[in-house]
Amino acid sequence: MSWIHGDARPASLAAKVVGGALAAGLSVALGALLRAHAGGGEPLMAVFPILLVTCLRLGPVAGWLCLVGGLLGAWYVYLGQPFSFVINGQETRALVTAAIVGGLIIGVCGLRRSALRKHEQVADALILNEAQFRASFENAAVGKVQTEPVSGRIIRVNQAFAAMLGYRPEELVGRIGWELTLEADREADQDAYQLMLDGERPAYIREKRYVRRDGEVIWARASATVTRSPKTGHPILAAAVVENIDEQHRSRLALVNAKQDLEILSAEQAATIAQRDLLLREVYHRVKNNLQIIDSLLVMQRRRLSDPEARAALAGLRGRVFALGLVHHQLMGSQDLKTFDAAPFLEELSSNLLQGVATKDVRLSVNAMPLQVGLDFAIPLGLIVTELVTNSLKHAFPSGEGAIEVLLKRGEDDRVVLIVSDDGTAAASSGSEAAPASLGVTIVDGLVRQLGGTLTVRRGPGFHTEIDLPGPVV
Image (cartoon, rainbow, N blue to C red; front, side, top):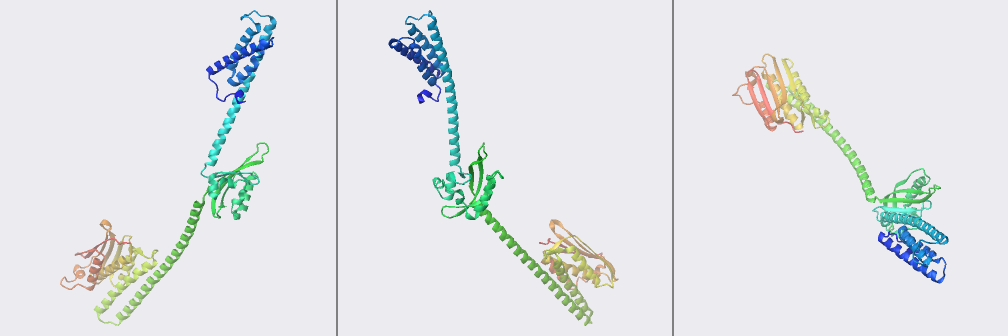
């Protein structure tokens, strides 16, 4: 049968010509044989079976060669004489009838051959599609499953899905797919799948847990669609893609747990910081209160003294204690409990010093830039300003009138410049150069060295002290 239907590969023109010629010769020989044994018109009949086989095998070109050659040969055999165009009417009708029948045979065989070729092309396309689908299905990196849509019985699985669950592919065929899902997830999965089966959702997409052959539970993302009958719309096949997301899911879960732990730790840290701030404010408050107690003791002691120098010494000590207490008061009210702005601090400090000599008509101005300072910088700064302003108030104005200016500005290379100046009598401000250094001068000199700065004094007119300091580290 395969020889009759012909080869799927088309024959060359030379093969068709040779085949047609041989078929014509064979039909002539067969016709002569029939003529010799049976007589009559049998030579024409010998063309048809050979023509039919030739057309089916080699096509219309070889068929026409076979028909023409066979008719000419049969004509000669039929007449039984050398070739001649002189024939009677009966012979003519026989030849014409044979030609028509042969043409019909060639036409029908051509149509059949064309139909067979199209059928072969369709079959080849189906085979190719099946091969491509099989390669895509079997060699996919993710799991693929085909099931009966209603029962959920597995029809086909690929190697990736079987390996993911620890099986061989043939071991899963015929099983119910829901048996592979963790029991705790089945009901919710089946409900979501039923929505797709009923046409309420276009696809089924779920992150679910599967149970491996060894009992281990793994996470996977399954997405399925249903193929429906074009005529009835009933589901006929369900196809699913299953991706192993166990590592991603565990990583995500670990990240969520870590985030929760971090939030707990952050809350604990915030509580600890709040507790620390509360304690630190309490410390600043207690220090301030203790310094106020010391100040009250100094006031009581000063009242019991009659010596002017001793009373003046206690007054100076009160100014230093106030400076210390004011630093802690500023820190207690700051937001970070570490730094505060030096400008309002110097204004309040200077105002308090001026109030201690209210009997004098002295004007005090403070021009300070905003500067965040910490405890280590603020205490020396406050004591320096206290000593310099107190010195001017005590010595620069014998007449009781004058002006003092406190200036805090930015210097070069992020340094800080503090200037305390007055317009009083230079001699009164400076004292005798031969006299020993006072306690205030000693304190200022020591504090400037402690801060790593330099001190410059200029006398007349008035008394001008300039201190260059490194910027505070906060």
